[in-house]
Image (cartoon, rainbow, N blue to C red; front, side, top):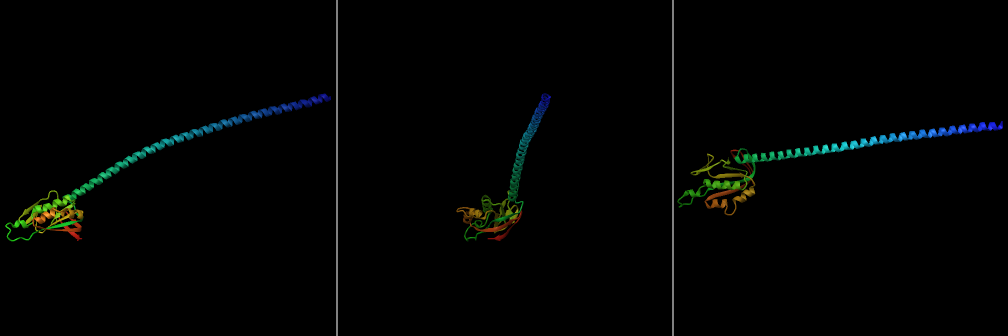
Length: 237
């Protein structure tokens, strides 16, 4: 009976051991399956995230290229506008300069005034015309002033333009049909130093006029106003 009881106990121990081994094996298998499942899920999630990052990077590169292209187009448009503005500005300057030369607009600035007067007649000289101011004397002064860079010129208040003419009629002259008497005042707006030096060159216009018995007086003016038809001296230096 004792042998048989031991056999039963041994059988129970073996059965319990088998059960424990089987349970442990099944548990390990399930654990491995779960771990493998989690690893695969994590890998899939990481792969998805990696693909998303790559997509966003590609999208950012495309957007950057688009932005760069738009910026280049904007830069080109700005350059075109700048060139157009510069062209327009230059055209306006040219038009204003032409309007000043033609005497269509008033001009204000520094300049000089040249007064030409008849010389005192010398008794015994057969020709008194040698002592009066003629149109070619005035024309010499006007031409020299424009060559020296005068922006605007007037004779006895009458603006000179590209169509002006000077004509001598006895002791008087006509400027565009308007009669002017001596003394003749030629007023010019421009760099007063340059204008003055141009007239006072040795052997220049002033010396020639003096040699032809014309009295010449040159004044520098700090401010001159020349209207389309008349000039006005505002302030002397």
